[in-house]
Image 1 (cartoon, rainbow, N blue to C red):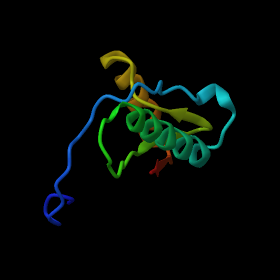
Image 2: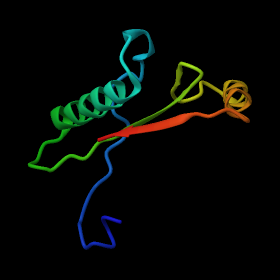
Image 3: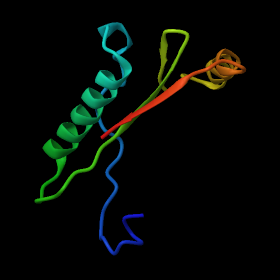
Length: 94
């Protein structure tokens, strides 16, 4: 969308920010907002030029559990089984 809008940008990956936060007792909206801010702050320290930095984070909440990125294929399959047929919420923060 940014490119289609005429913006010139560079993607800088990966952020050095660890994606942990599940044990922080934050709500999903609090967690994604904090993680997005931390990712942007991390990238800001590594760039050598003036820039507008856009960062985001997304998590899923299901049965009171916050699901982040799966660790591997088996973990991803376990997460999909947990989500299957259950109401869940997706939270994104930037």
